[in-house]
Image 1 (spheres, helix red, strand yellow):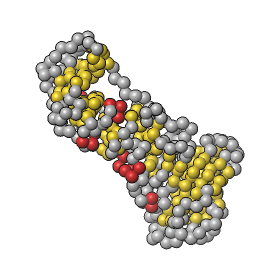
Image 2 (cartoon, one colour):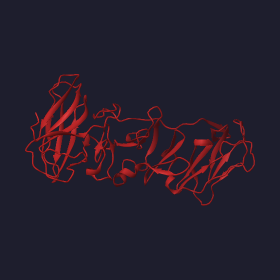
Image 3 (cartoon, rainbow, N blue to C red):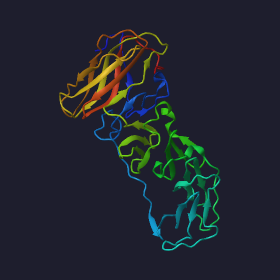
Image 4 (cartoon, rainbow, N blue to C red):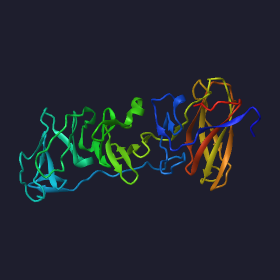
Length: 347
């Protein structure tokens, strides 16, 4: 039990936590983590270890073959790439080529070929090249009077698989990260992980329409990252093992304190011998790795108190879980502090 000069405070309660390597750990909001991978995101509201990484499906629009050329059906007409041009067949013709007007849209400002194209919001077409992307704002018109925007350099792709549409918005993965274009401005999806772009850069993109997710995979179709468009959070699956790191706890006036215990609000479906492994950082780096065995019976939801080994007075505190058994679902992490904090503004 907490003494008169002790109190419990919440350290983490919004799960799963999205990755944010750019914000100072002491300034992170609840629901974000400075370092984590292989989180289970199939159980909203809980911290758990993923058994398998989430997956998605490849973008595969309907195609037709005419004279050995593959055409793709969008907006009631066929389209195909021809060098630096996007050819457009006349509406409703799917068995022969019938040119209408100039027969398409030129993107020949330079010698780079068109790499990918896909429909997007408002009857538009997104067209990608290695140096950037364009929009054809009236691609759904049955008149061959197509217009095009200036190039948007952030929407470049190296190969067609690096671009995918979801909810009418094109997403691209390139050497600078993951980007999306709503027709007005480009959003840098990976701005919170600029210092750790490896899992997110130049990846083949899949999508999970039902769960509103963009999934990045490598050449062997192994998942490397997930972007949850609904929650606007990024998750890393590029490494083996498991990690979850809390935000950094600091006092409202940066005063010294010590953490006596860590409390877990947990549902244990793994049995009485289920464990987590953890490390603690009190300002001088993460120390030894310890194990904690949950006492709750299978299926029970409890509050369990982990006594911190050799608590020391410090100005910061972080907890890193380095492994956890499958079947442990943590819905809150609290800390027992040795001093009364009479202000609410703490990180």
